[in-house]
Amino acid sequence: MGQVASRAATGRGLCAAYDMEDYVTTKQQQIITAFNAYMGGGNIRYNDWYVGVAADPRERLFNDHAVNEQTDAWIYDACSSTREAREVEQYFIGQGTRGGPGGGDANTKSVYAYRITSRTVE
Image 1 (cartoon, helix red, strand yellow):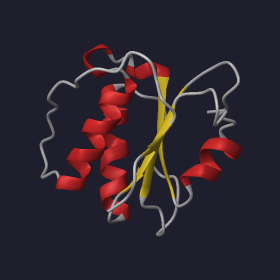
Image 2 (cartoon, helix red, strand yellow):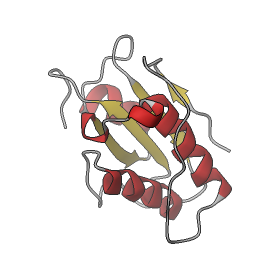
Image 3 (cartoon, rainbow, N blue to C red):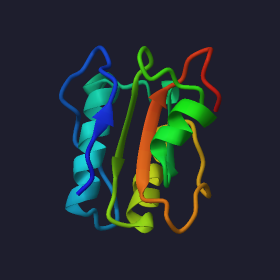
């Protein structure tokens, strides 16, 4: 089971129920719920967020995307498989976050998100 890591965001709240046509694993449901709550609960502006997958989410967040670990809003967690991670990514892209499918490799099991700022690199 992965560990959720994040930088505290403001405006946390309970997340609304979500709808997925396909089977969702318990871990996927936990990640989606945690990310939704972190991103703003029922008042999420999905287009203010970028969601992706990575084998090393810290490298992607803090180096590739130039997220400030101390001041920016970010979160990541690990799934049990690449398929699970990519399905969670697709869920959030379907909700309106920035990002796109196809990143990573066979070792890609983590999902990450960050609030887009003028300093971050998409």
